[in-house]
Image (cartoon, rainbow over all chains, first blue to last red; front, side):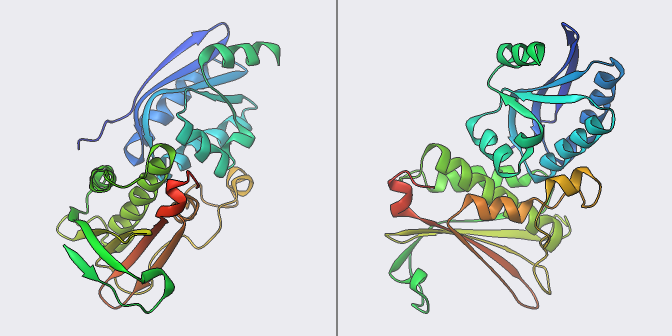
Length: 118
Length: 161
């Protein structure tokens, strides 16, 4: 089974930076993920959305990379929000307590709505 | 293939069938192949949906740990995986060629501490495994480490975690 290396596209939607994540979040993803996050960070928005709809695998190294993004967001006082996770990864975000520090929504519409009212 | 396991513990009573044995080269990313092969091997058992996803994550994490810490990602050193089942339990044994105590991050991950830089961001593997299966056992000697993942098939059939 070939590794689906992570590809990330960064876009700006209504003053919110969105990272569209596609592929696997594992040890191979580190440089791509951090480069994309830096690009989103440079847009200087209060909130950055992580779109996991195109992600079909996250391993423990990937969890560590997401922890790293959360740490960066905390330093720069940005809000990190996730959407599009499968039920399984929602459970993993709960077990690891990532969802205590990063709101999780089912889709972009609900994530954007919550972002705009808070 | 049918194997009679020693009845030296309550967990191992009964007759066990080996469903699949595989050898995985220790190369980054191969844990996904391992977890999909295990999922294929148990397709006739009543493990579905979220329960199957939990098992796959546990298999992937244990295989990754074996490749990284046991075999140091030396491709010529395989990780051996044996999938077997009794009437009541599923066992997945994952064996590497490491010596000494099995290497898992012993520290319980604390996300707040990780965000504050007090803990490494890594160290989630064992924590995830423990939360994904009903039981696990880690053994080792001078030449091998084995992590055995156990699922209670009756609880799985009832839809339990």
